[in-house]
Image (cartoon, rainbow, N blue to C red; front, side, top):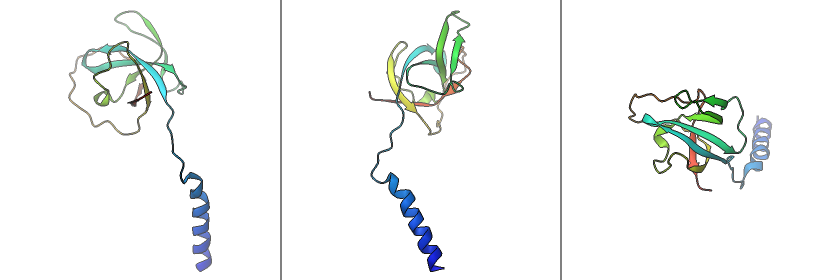
Length: 124
């Protein structure tokens, strides 16, 4: 019994020591708020960084303007997106794994890409 406990403890220490003192950094991306649609129907374009193409729309056409956008996604967590960022502004972001707490938004519709991502705006 003591041998199993010693073996378990040793294994745990060896496996966990690789992360000790290391700062885990998330991938940082650069984006631009392409469309600030009514009622927080936001469309963001990926400018720098690599995101799996299954998570974003590689090509999407805005049915209102007829303009085609590339490498875009709809903002999933609109309630945590800074109000200071306006249409056309560029910013840096990471993927956000915290679930959106929700907020009051109106029900008006503006077209947005079918793919949605939750992001967190960060400093450069």
